[in-house]
Length: 116
Image: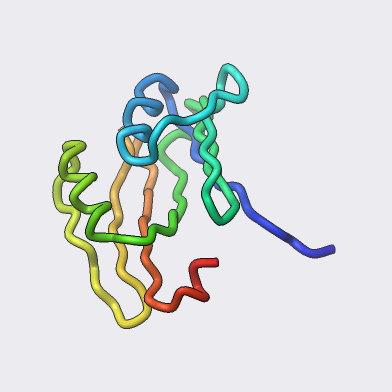
C-alpha cells in the first residue's frame, strides 16, 4: 500500500462563520455534505472544514502557497493582522488562527520539489 495524497480536516463550531472566514482566503468552497465544506487544490490534496463543536479549536493544518507575499496582502485585506512572513532558508511561513482558534500555517517552500 502507498499513500498517494492527503486531505486535511479542521473542526469548527459554526460552519457559516467558518465558510465566510475561509472563503476570504481560499475562494469559494464546495459544500459536499450539510456539515462539510471542501476545497481541492491544484496539485492534489484538499481541506475539509466540518461542523464539530466538541473538537473545534484544537486542529491545525499547513497549506502550501506559491507566493507568500501575495497571500500576506490578501490576509491583511481580509482583516488579519500580524501576517508578516517568517523567512527561513528552506521555507517562508505565515501562521494564523481561524475564529475557533485552529492553527492555519501557510508555507512557501524555496525548493519547488518540496511543494509537490
